[in-house]
Image 1 (cartoon, rainbow, N blue to C red):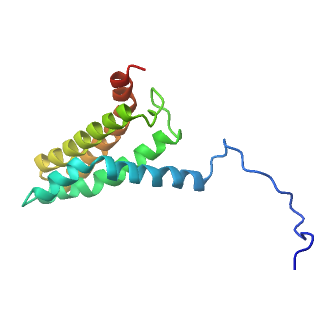
Image 2 (image 1 turned 90 degrees about the vertical axis):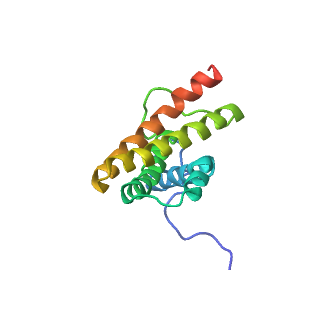
Image 3 (image 1 turned 180 degrees about the horizontal axis):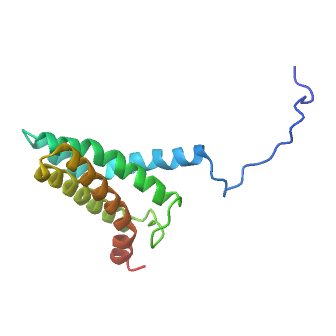
Length: 145
């Protein structure tokens, strides 16, 4: 069954600078795993708490996807804000652990202080985007790049 191809379209290799939905989703997928793994200290803190107010839960439900999308956009180069995304060196990874954990904790606690779920959601988005934008600057300071 192997014979000459009957497809008249030429085979064109994908260029690395192509911006497609597939590459955007790949960047967000990698950001999801990065945030979920490196924000483990906040996960443990949330698991050890007995009661969580509604506004704080709302902030948590909104902050995670907002942070994942913001990290995916910044890490993939879709949005440029200041410095480039830090390398995969150990010291830059430790900075991300601290920044992600602190940023999500600020989003959760700030949402709990606001007590209104709608305000908590807005706060969570602002805190998540601020956290993602802070990562390259914090890594540059810590690694002296």
